[in-house]
Image 1: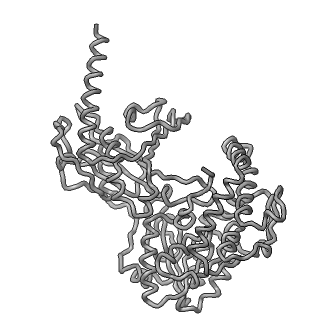
Image 2: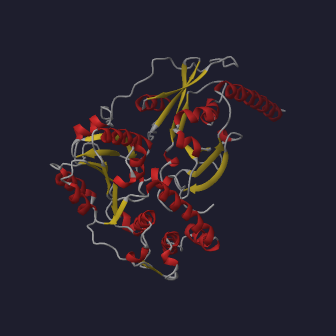
Image 3: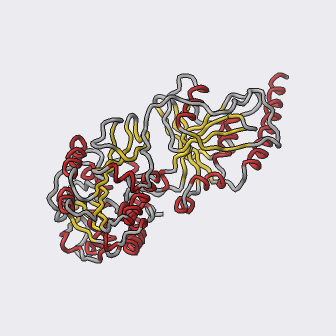
Length: 480
């Protein structure tokens, strides 16, 4: 498979994960009903927000987008069926006629970015693959361009600095803009750098500096007639305006926010939902008892998986782990055995929809953590992992698009041993990387399973009984 992002991720990927996308989709749908008839996407990137606008009801002809990167400009021109001559693209090793084809230009751009890093083994192998299967890569990109054209044809795209684009719409009361600027200084420039091997008629623009760029944007649009929304990553309490949406912990000490020049209106448009604020609220437990360490589990035992709050999951993780330090997960699940809590685990499904052009597609959900109460007779951790593999359970967490993509469960363990015995027979070890501090970084994967919680319980009990017999036999042989 060519080393490019899944076609769907062209448009629903980028920085925003499904939680933000759902929030913004509700907001845009309400905006249309409220009379907004123009959608603006500066810093268009891979047109994720323009695609979301179409899903929300905006016609492509009502969408204006802009950017200053060559990749986005080639995409935009291809969607509009404009020839690339105006971009004056030149690329080392590629002829003039080749560079008239948008798919070939995008291939050349990625190829020359890879050349720059070819001294590293990963990029060298990727470069060899791109050379050997050049035609296949270009055909794959063309499929994505065709899909983009089918969805967004009719929109207007320009190579334009975001500040200039925003200034154009300040007095338009029917315009709503979503701005998704780089989260670190010169981010786009570093990502798309070809070390001078590709040049084009780059427009003049001002680098966006996150240190003061968000404040500048909010100041510029404070009294504007248009509605402006902006994605910002920052520490709690340091946003440039009152956030209308927040997601906890994208990085250590950093949250993701959506801010607006008119937060009250934006909240109302988002179906009147109250802002979801990240906070360091007190940990809390569920209104149920914990499973006793000697509890007897049989085939008649009832297993339940319930989504719980982050603070509740953290409570049990801290309770069951000495010196607990762990990251939170977007989705936290409790494992109940006959109504008693026996374990918690966290799921992250963002890999299904995140990623930038040029990255490899992932059809895997990520099992971020799994933790159970210590039991005298059973290995509950294996039951937890088997439950997390179930397709029926996973589908309940996914929307329609995510259900089409998801096919695997993946997890990573840091251990001093080259194998995690608790995963043996349940998940396949696909990568083992030595780690100077912990010993090994192990990646495990498995297909999703067509089974219910009850079927999982029966299978797990069968394996546990077999394990106990084999263990007893081994001990007996040792004592002879």
